[in-house]
Length: 437
Image (cartoon, rainbow, N blue to C red; front, side, top):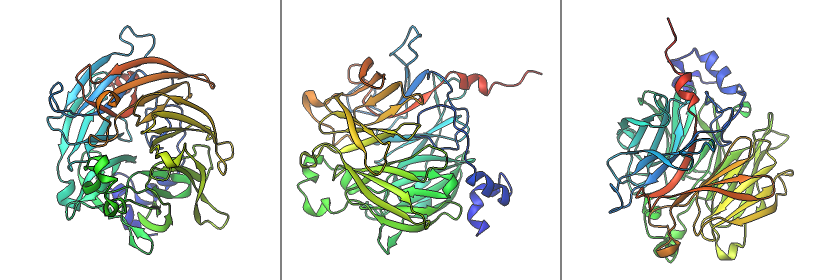
């Protein structure tokens, strides 16, 4: 073991303790199911807020990207209403966000640049505020298009999608501490099967595994979708790999072929489980990534999502806490599907519902009784005319039917295009209250 590779923890705790932290399996009590296992202050009951990272639209309201807070407590007088919005003063293709491990902050960014925005959500969870903007990602790493923000102990691992050199898909990860100081960068593997592309990342601490997926670069994702799909050369510049990393050493150890742009990664949350699932956007396939008896990782196509000939374009997935179910949103046909994962080697679709004219993200509460859906994919990929719905929709789920609970029309409210979501709680405010003397 090269303890120098744990330098991102060494400032806070001794190296030996760092290893113990990384390999420990934290007890998760609540919250949405896609969060880093290192996040504390988890929601143990009904969530109070949904934070929505929103793309600005020129001429609509202030036109800026913004963090929007919506009240989702059914007992509240403002249930289903916007409580606050925090514009960042630019429009840069707002996309994903993530909590720091102490849950005091949300980090977010845009794909049309390299700035990372840090929001304070602990002081007043109903009304976040912009703390700082981290501007050195491109200069320190050569990476642009920050996409995934994944909490490690005292640190944030940021996965980028592109680079400053040619704005293609070869890119990497950057590591920061929670104060926003740059620590290290890790390029995606090129050669020996690696294509250098990236998209999502997720950790299984008990297996010392960091798993990454792949998409495409700025030169592709910023083009209009109709124009892009007619360009045969450009369509070949999509990721077809997933990489297993040694988490402690932060080194790639195995590259797996997963054709068709594998996107979101969801590990089974069952203690001791050794598998994860992903959806390949361009082939409409579900893939299982699993460790075999010899300790090697294998990727296997296990199910089909909709009709691949019609390119439904699966964009987001959400696994249930017991690992027995998976929600899948498909952008083009506006369908939300549920797959039975009781046997992860043979998922079976058991439910579907048309939930919008275009769909993107899907988040579910830890108890599985509430599901939230947003609409926007990318500004140049969203549909036009009446199909360009922009919303946050809340649903209840009783195991048989998704029932609409509320809707926020982001166009009518002059907010922009609704993309990524995170669940929030008012309890966070008291959790960090100063102790009485």
